[in-house]
Image (cartoon, rainbow, N blue to C red; front, side):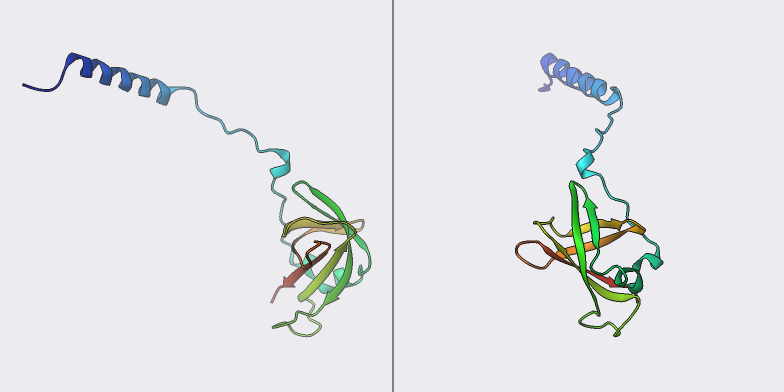
Length: 140
């Protein structure tokens, strides 16, 4: 004889019915992401990443903004890349920013100020206090 019992058949039928009801239920919707986790738009215009645009604003304060971050930083240097970049290149250079207080982790942030289109830069802290940051622009 078979090991199939009435109880096994009813149990299997109930499980199958429950799975069907769950699968046919209302469609699931994703919860909106919290505002702090919103992704910042990334700028793509090549003209935004030219040396002269930053060099004429050296010593000026910029707003650095990202998810949960808004901090004032001063652009303190616009220099040649230490390796592989042509001296004085308009398209390949390094930016150094300084903040008065501890800044964010490394990441992509929007840098802006009055009369300056918001520009995305990947900023990397270069000291333990996270007050000095560098960004490399390398558009060969």
